[in-house]
Length: 263
Image 1 (cartoon, helix red, strand yellow):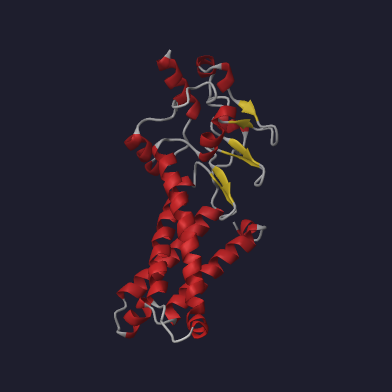
Image 2 (cartoon, rainbow, N blue to C red):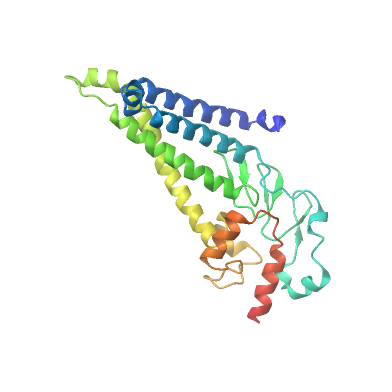
């Protein structure tokens, strides 16, 4: 883990933490709602807000540093037996990665940034400097949810501290840091809303960003109809599998079963 911390992602993670706590400090030091609650001795709101910020930072490091589902060896894919191979179309059979030469499980993809194959690959996220895959995708979504809550609360708090002054120059001087906090929380709120909405849709339809964007090039999807998804089990089942099933899924078996039933 410590080796991962001090790789090139160290600057990204350090910048994220500094920006998060610097913005939080600005909100507490100015005459905002949080500061007023604190001065009145009503500590519930300040404590809850600070706790949510801390939880968001912890989730950020969890998603950033955990194994997203790296394919370690060919042994992991050896469970696919001959009978299963015969049931699967030729285009959907397992293939070797052209970069690391490992046998790729279905829905896995090689990440050129991490230089590893990742199970149920979604995308490589420069924000966390890690891939989003089978093992950390649900944690990524949880992080986005908590982060959005913190950002929206921070946006409202920063706005509450803006004061009026006789001149524009004085207004900018007195509200400069709060305006910066307002800008940061506003921009990131918009980005997180888009990301959270997209990934909730992907989770509910049992697909990934990579599959959604590149299905015309993926061997096991390009022969399917435009609206057909062999991994879709319905909204509730998809969400249950996404958030509650923590084991490695043999997608080859799911695919073969669906294709066999369709024949």
